[in-house]
Length: 271
Image (cartoon, rainbow, N blue to C red):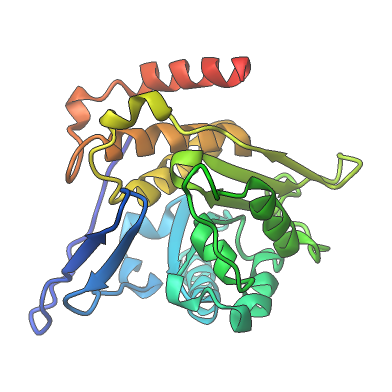
């Protein structure tokens, strides 16, 4: 795997910093910015190999993401890059409101993104609802209903196997994958891949910070390698499992990703 990054000096701005407030469980947490985030745009990738990347992960409001995707496609076209990239959109939590539901739905079904990935709390917030992760109150049926509401008006197919996908990250309850499938009688397919660590392995979870980003990065690699959305979720689940085991970044040299993926996929076939 070729890993690259670009350093962008911002001498007149402080480093981005934040504080995570934990509640009764590791999934009950609130993030607070201590300094303004240092945002990047597609223009920052011009004249770098990163502009030709196969996948892009956006984290912003619907309006900002729509504009940035248009800018990205224009810059790639100007650079002679014809391939259409995989676009994953993680919504900004503060924009997940009932008032913003329709504009989010419109972007999801527009064909600009392949994967829309809120967590279960963000998804519920679009519908004036809540969804606790505790075993007593977590509602899988609610996650499924709300996910289908996002795809219910999907009449336009993307160029990726004719599918539009929503992946809801549900912490210790795994994730819910729902995608359009013209070959299926109901026009949708879905799956509930479980978390890598089960309830009897709760002691393995040290800090869930960054697990969502790790999941979506692994998901992207899984999609690019397999073109299978459920298997991509398996890749994402395994990637997140390394992130939650430590505070900070995991040591890649000590990670047996292939072995853990094989173990998890074998478990999926049993489940």
